[in-house]
Image (cartoon, rainbow, N blue to C red; front, side, top):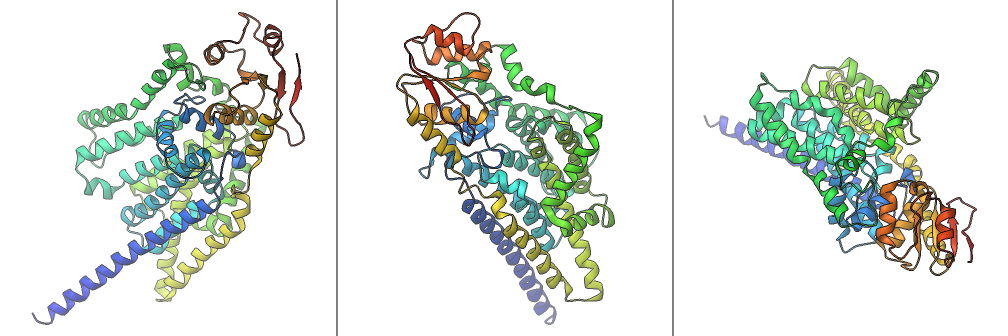
Length: 495
């Protein structure tokens, strides 16, 4: 009996030591990623890392407006909170939300690997760092965009769908969390719909009561969409689709503007698109990461809920990204890369376990080398994702507003130009004397209504809404046509 007491004490000490190491490793993960993201974050409005939409999102949030389709209601609500922080510029505060969501995603990946698969600390860290330091994810963590928040909700669904979560949490609470995460996730990005099968999964037999609970909470999670018509009623300066009618609301939230590009499959380009996606995967994790991920998927595959979930997420998001006909469609591969990072952790865990069989002390050395590999990758990739020195949008906006004459009609063309001018004119309230008109949106009736509400003294024609006609109806105003190119300046004509 006396001999058993020291054994129990030793066991408790070791358990406490392991717990302490887990928390310490999680703290290092959190602080290191946060430091890297803050170091490389854009200080103001930026076009880095395909972030031209940032000006629209920032301005819509700041003016209680409606962003471009599909409206992104949850993102705008959260961005508004971050914009109230007393630090940095308005754009910086909004981008900070991307960094916070990215860090939280990495933390949940770490915890998911430890709890869901009983993986050891080092492989769990490898999964979190592999994804957190992957260039595509990192690039979105330092600008104003919706994608890191999108990933956060996918990671939460993965976490809630493991056997460990089913065993740990009461069924009603778990059903509520699953449904709410799904609904809120769609309120940020509609491709969350690809995770719908998660609501139909259960550890035991699925029944109507479970489905009712989950879909009820999913409906509650969708409530932020109701803020879009409410905001539109107050006629904000950024009011895409003016969703105060059912048809306008449907046009906005279904992304009808982009539907022609959905699953735009061109047989002659399929092979090239798949090769591009594979090359981008290699860019994210390098050759060693690629091998580890394939080992985790194939060599050390286990029929767990986590592995099944990651395979499911990987397939539809990859198909969508490959067949979506836009220049930045590759960003939609982020959920697939998230899954691959989890496979990297599983592969590393299996490899370390096998190495321990022959060399008992190999785990620490091998794990350290693999972590060092991803850190070295991060050092190499930093210049490619760093947005801290990108001041093109800020300089363009300030220069344009300086050159534009008093009371001018400004016809802006292109996302970079329009959203930058919206940011300075509407969000920062600079140059209230000018009239900013997005040329590409001018034919749309909803945008004509926005222009009329924002500039009531402007004379607009009832038909043939072209820049030349608008200019002719306002002969007393100077006219400027502006589109961003590295060399082009603002061109204006006096009345």
